[in-house]
Image (tube, rainbow, N blue to C red; front, side, top):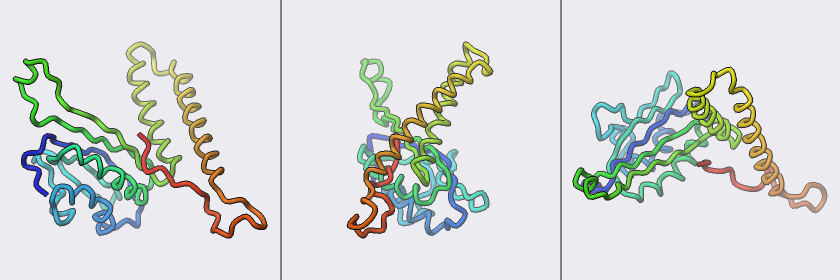
Length: 209
């Protein structure tokens, strides 16, 4: 599809550690929501960024890492690709990771700014991982980094152990609640308890904002 007159420049940024058995062909299929939206016929065809100084989409087979610093032109409907993208990467990732999606208003200019109009810039933060626990760990790590960076303007890092402990408790409580909700979705055990495989009901979250 053509996005020559698209209202946004969309930047996708993030590094995702992949399982050691993930091949380029498997990754290409997982990233199809991205390169197909860009109008490409393959990952190799669509991996280049709109800007030459950005590395685009790269697969490092030695480190088993997907590296994304990639800009394309698009519309707000690009958001519809994100659920499938996250679900696909959940299946291939080895640990939790964050992916940043930034929408830059390509039609906003100095005249708009002088007239007091607001741009339509937007930012979406996604998390992927092999399990809900891995996703929450990535969320926790980012939050700790942000909070510590902010508070170190006023406090020594050694004083912030209690703050980090409280953040860990919040995520521990959230994970316990999620685990309980998944347990409730399991079929009853014992005679007459439904002859399914018993792998637990409920779908794994695709991503947690």
